[in-house]
Every structure is written in structure tokens, then in C-alpha cells.
Amino acid sequence: MTTKKYYAVFKGREIGIFTSWAACEEQIKGFSGALYKSFKTREEAEAALGLTDRALLFQVEPKEVNLWKTQNKILPANEFIINSVCVDASCIGNPGEVEYRGMHTATRKIIFHKRPMANGTNNLGEFLAIVHALAYLKNQGSHLPIYSDSETAILWVENKKVRTKLVKRDSNKEIFDLVERGLKWLENNEYTNPILKWNTAYWGEIPADFGRK
Image (cartoon, rainbow, N blue to C red; front, side, top):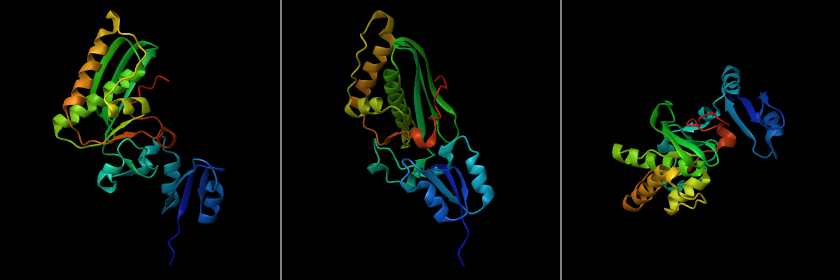
């Protein structure tokens, strides 16, 4: 006996719940960035459509994903790792005051927060956030993956090189000193934590976001 399924379409020609695969397929086939998920009951599908945190729909445990093949890659929408650390930075002005933080993605518990620093850029803050997370996790003996929504910062970490047009001045000495320390840490330390790009289009804003957009 075939088990009945309910298909919730989050992004497609029509958003809603469909009771057959054929009806669901009409909404997603050929639709760029289509997003859907099947459920065993209508109640589950309705609850999922009401979620504001879409990432919770597509979580998997780290053991279910080959982390060594995903470093610095965007995972498919159905391979979100809930047991992870996510980081983000905020810059008020360009340049301007920069702060960053990291949190455990599943619990939303903030594990570190750097107070605002003068005359910096968002990319520098994002870079420092990733390095801070790497150092923190290594100190904890943890291999958890790290999510960032900054492709630039991920590349800087991967290449161990910061390419910023910002000029170093007395006013931003603090942030440049931290960047230098971060680069030295990367040169002198090995790490096993995959650094993954947060898939904002599917999962919404990264949990560590400061909400200032």
C-alpha cells in the first residue's frame, strides 16, 4: 500500500501544499531555485510552511555529509548541518564601526562577540570571525563545520591572504593588528573544520546575522 504524502512548495510557480507528486512537480519543474519538501501529514506540511527559519527544514547531522568533500562549498539545500558554528560581521558605514560574532547554529548560543572597532570593513570583520571560530574550535578540540555568508572572507582564509583596499591608519590600528594576528594563526596552525558557504537563498539569513540590513 502506497503511503500518502503531502508536498510543501516553498519556492515555485505556486506556493502551498499539494497532495500528489504530479501536482507538486508542475510547480517546481523548470523553475529556477525551486524549493520543496515532502511530509507524511498535512499538519507537518502546514507547520513547515509557517516556519520563518527555513534552515531547520533541511538539517542533517555532520556524519551524514562527507565533510572532506564539502570544504568551502555550498551544500545542497537538503544538506544543512545543524550541529555547526555560524559567524557574521556588521559594519555601520564603509568604512565604519565593525563588530563580529559566532554562535552555535542549533542552539543560537553566542560563543564569542568582538565589540565594535573603528574604521574597518565588513569583509575584514567576516575574515576575523572565521579565524576566531577556527581558533575557538581548535582550543575546544572540536571538528564542527563553520558557516559564513561571505565568499570573500572564505577565500581570504583559504588562501591565507587578505586583499583589502582599506588603508591602515591610526584610527583602524586595532582591526589591522587583529588581521595580522589572524594571518599568523593560519600560517602556524592546521585545522580540520570545513568552512562552508551559508546558502542564504534557501535557508534565510545566517543565524549570527546582526539584523541591521
